[in-house]
Length: 177
Image (cartoon, rainbow, N blue to C red; front, side, top):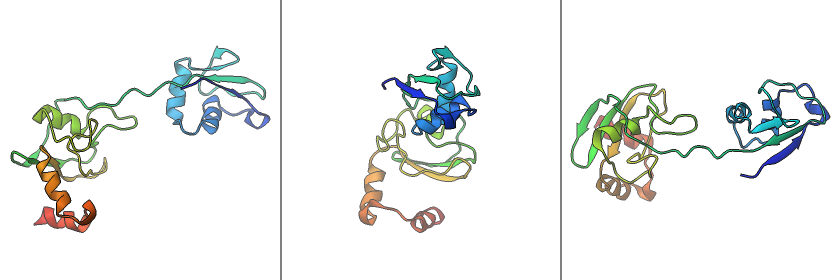
């Protein structure tokens, strides 16, 4: 990513440095911008500042964005409750509070990390970051998650559903039935 020079405008006077940079570069989260400020990647008048620093009109702000660290899933010893398992499929009781896969700000402690520790490898469906994940539950939702260990269940699921899309009533029926 290329460095950017911003200039504090009269309307920016009295605003926080992190707020102004986020307003001008909204594709980056405010927490990420705050980290760049702490790392010295954002300078005001050529000097390091705090995220809370109040700006004056006309001050130059130099921003050197950093690439986010690459996300990857690695095994972690996290207890899992396995409800069912065969050679192709595993059904997991996902507790509320557990994130299914890594994402913004979450790099470890996920269900995928636990699954990789327990089973070594999963279906390639979902890619390297979400191996075997074909559906998910929100972080604070508990429930049963079906995870293919091989590609066979995924092919079966896709071929048994029109356009490869499952509807929630179908999933409820599958889990209750």
